[in-house]
Image (tube, rainbow, N blue to C red; front, top):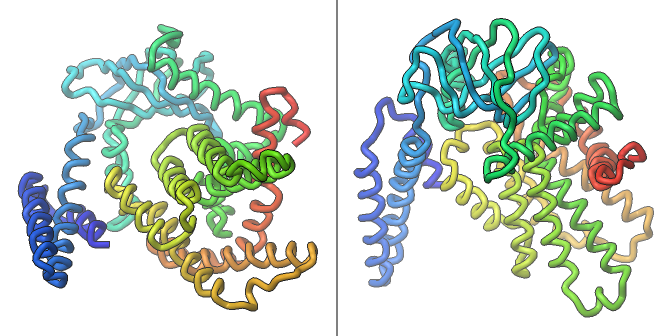
Length: 448
């Protein structure tokens, strides 16, 4: 908590604090806490450790800001000729959106050229994919700031993602080079191409806007969803279902875990002699990582993977998988790696929901009536459905305030909509999505 307070304090400052000062303060108080603990002065040691955590939060945020620093456009330029390598392609309702890297911009020197540009291409365009080189004419601007005080700050997000400019193209792009076939970079481009083909196979099975929702649910690509559908999702409070988050990654990993464990339990020689629960946990971690990579390997799905991985690592270590301590460790690791995540709706809402759920279920677990024995199969199934509904209710109540703050709206029908949609997603949509993934290599995804 104090580490997060330090990070929040850093981002609230009007000027950049000296990194060496905050790091020095953290080091001094860490040393002081160690000395006081050695002298058995526990109260003073805790106080010193708290000050150390605050200063460390400021230092980590400052270090992250310094590490990711990259050129950003100072103003609008163009039309100019831009040459760059396609890092990602996303279809839109009208046109395409591409992310370019390894960029050359007319009239800009190397020191002023952004690390990445995000451009919108309209009209007829040549066929290209991740890794190809494009030459095009474009008008470029810096990433825009928040539309109102306290609103979503795309400029800050772009800074930490290395995005130095946005814009739109004029006319038709020209493919001037193909993707490399060897090297480390080619692996990333190959995975992006695989992701794009996966999305196309989903669209082939489910055409229209339902297909775009399925693509968003499986690959995180949402650009081709119409504004009307997005607005309906926002009004109903269901937009989180198409944003790859802890819910999606956790469901995918959980399905893999229980499926693998059930299959291994069918073999008595293995079930009686091997730790099948740990084998299933390893498979779940691998499945969660694959899903996060399919979703674009951006910060939110990778953060969700980290949370899920820590849960299954607790299973591997024979510890309680879901506990406040595990959540604290997950938050600590995320804040150390990506301090700016603290300010995002995804981080705040994810941890608010998880903390509330653990608090509720730890309380209920101590009640004998909540886990009765000798239930029939129908009673167990009914209890599972009720558990999913309770989970939805608790998570919805825990995240309502954060949603109102970040999105300036309260979805009136959010609770009712989620009570229907989340159990449906958990019990029906996600299992079939995982099965479709498993059948795609042999071309039988249509059966799912």
